[in-house]
Amino acid sequence: MTDSINKFKPPANCLDEKKVLITGATGGLGSALAKRAAQLRATVILAGRNLPVLEALYDEIELIHGIQPALFPVSQETATQQDYAELATTLKNEFGELHALVHCAAQLGMPTPIEHYPEKMWNDVMQVNVNSAFLVTRALLPLMQSTGNASIVLTTDHRQTAFWGAYGASKAALDAFTLILADEISGKVGPSGHPSVSVNAVNPGAMRTRLRAKSFAGELPKESPLPETKVDALIHLISRQDPSLHGEILSL
Ligand SMILES: NC(=O)c1ccc[n+]([C@@H]2O[C@H](COP(=O)([O-])OP(=O)(O)OC[C@H]3O[C@@H](n4cnc5c(N)ncnc54)[C@H](OP(=O)(O)O)[C@@H]3O)[C@@H](O)[C@H]2O)c1
Image (cartoon, rainbow, N blue to C red; front, side, top):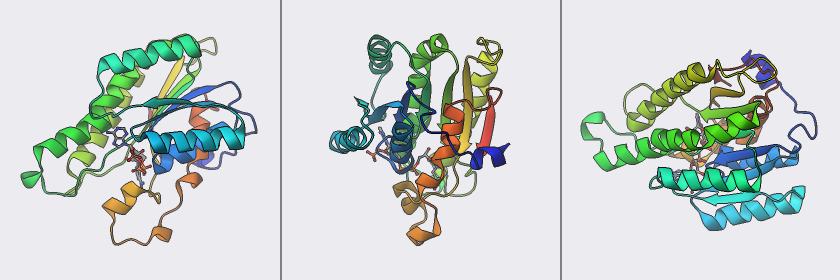
């Protein structure tokens, strides 16, 4: 299964008219995905906490691909369910539909033994990596269900060894969240007979991003592939090439 996803070459325009929200859109994977989705004709909604970087990405996408993105400036450390409810209302009013939600926002925290792990850092990592993923998903699920044939993708990692601390624990929680949500909505089928919203988690593997540089400080950048090499696999899920793909935790 992963093999066909890894080898997927998206047809041109395969996201035509699709609305795709990406959290962590200014990050390595998030920005590569946003640009690729726009190239395939999606309207991308860029969520991120750094407004100047978000605006530069907005300009680049609009200039190169000629499709106007939307911006959702947000700090996922502090945003509340009210902020996400307002986002859902805005998306409903502006677009009337949402085809994909891809969670790329993540914090690494710091490699530290649990014994010495700072409480604030633990809470911040959990807030961004797990709690806000829950809040965004819960707020946008009704719009995605009414859109039908939609897709939620969570980005995970498998780090359950010493010193991965809150990051490792948060990703294990995200895997569980994926499976629980997928199970809950698997009976809500669309016209195709498949779930109206698919829910899957993807471990993209090593990528040359800030998160990787922080976690493997001694590694040369060229030792990890660029995030651009991973995004077509995410496009496979977003565009629901295999509509039966649901409740999976995939490793690229
Ligand atoms: N890179 C790898 O080797 C690797 C391996 C396995 C899994 N993954 C997963 O892949 C996903 C993408 O990671 P990446 O490598 O692209 O990392 P990245 O370049 O560090 O991007 C992470 C993104 O999360 C955003 N973010 C962090 N805290 C936030 C907050 N409080 N509010 C809003 N946004 C916040 C960052 O915003 P700023 O741009 O403002 O900092 C950035 O856009 C993550 O889920 C990660 O766990 C990565």
